[in-house]
Each structure stands twice: as C-alpha cells, then as structure tokens.
Length: 261
Image 1 (tube, rainbow, N blue to C red):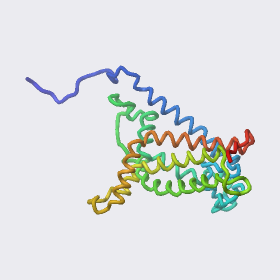
Image 2: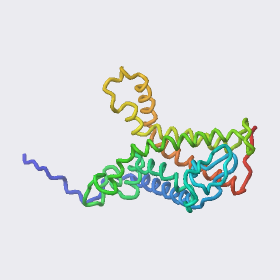
Image 3: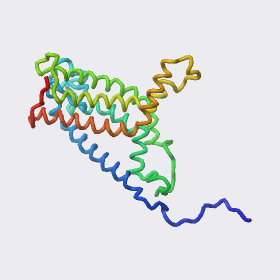
Image 4: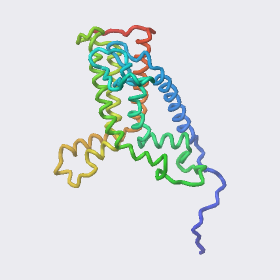
C-alpha cells in the first residue's frame, strides 16, 4: 500500500460544527470594555480619593499633584513637572504584568490576532514567528513585572487596611467601600500569587524538594491557585474596575458610602 506524508486536502477552515468563536468574542468584548473604562479613568485624573478610600488605579499616588490623603496614602515621589494624570505613573506596572501574563497572552492572541483563533481552527497568518521577534519578544519580561506587581499589591493591602478608618482618621470603622477594597485586594493577591513566575520563584530551581519543605509547601499552594489562574485573572480584573468605580462614585458625590459601624 502506498503511503504519503502530505496532509489531507481539506478546503474548509475547520471541521468544527460548534460555535467555537463565542469564547473569543466574549473575551474581546470583555477586554475592550475594561480597556475603554480604565483608559478614561486613568487620564481623568480626578475623583480617585474619598476618605478613607483610594482608587486602586491611582495607588500609590506618586505625583506631587495628588490630592492630599490622610494616613500617608500618597507618596509624592515625582515633582510638579509631571502634568499628566497620577494614574499613569503606577498603572504601567500592573498593566505590564497582565499584558505579559501567560493567560492574557492566550486570550488576546486568540480574540484579537486570531493566532490561533481556536483549537483545530486554521489561523489566517501565512508565517509564524512566535515570541522571538519585536515586539512580542518583550513578553519575556513577565517575570520582572511580577516582581513589580508584588509591591503594588502590598500598597493596595495597605489601602484596604486604611478603609477601616473614618474620614477623620479614627480606627474601628467600616463601610461598604471597606468591603469593596478588601475583596479587591484578596483577588489581586490570589491572581498575583497564582502566576507561573511565582511558582518558578518558589520551586522552579529546586532539585530536592525534601531539603526545602517550606518552599515545597508554598509551591504546592501556588500550584493549586495556578489551576484557577484564568478565573482569578477575570475576577481580579472585574474587582479592580469595580473598586475604582465605587471610589469614583463616592468621590464625585453620586452617593454616600454606607457605614456598618
């Protein structure tokens, strides 16, 4: 019997009969909505502080133009020469972390670049160079953005703790905004720690786990989180947007923050 190494001549782009394009469409719509909202808020430069709450888009607030914040929530490391929104000084770090994230790469490669558009679906590109050329070679900076995302998450944790104070700086108070910022920081940490780079930091170079029991337990914990990396990526993206929206509504006077105690 004669054999051939050529592939079967199938004229169809794919033989899949399901709606394989729906997840890609949903991903594109979700990302575009967040990009549109976050771009507007990042350049607005206003309504990002409602004592004691500070928007995660503007924290840490590094510019001298930041509104005065009680409790040291502003850091003022950049002088008056910065004329743009203070958010642009800090958003580059979480943006770089998410933009180079392994899950988000898959998400926007498929939904925006159709590379590939789906499993068992031929992509429309004639050539494939992967992430070996500019600008995609910059995706290799992901591990360094992880190192920068950790201190940002730590600052957001500090902001969440300040949410247990009232506008005058007294501790032992909590409002709806306190819960919003607290839920956001929990999801931010869960997403950050579920990162593949975090797993590598904890156990990627170990040859004998038995000699490093603490790091091994941490590696196992991060591995469990990593299995939910996609869900945590979307949950934390939604939570950071909602946290900013909540602070914006309170700061702009749309409604008063409900107090629990």
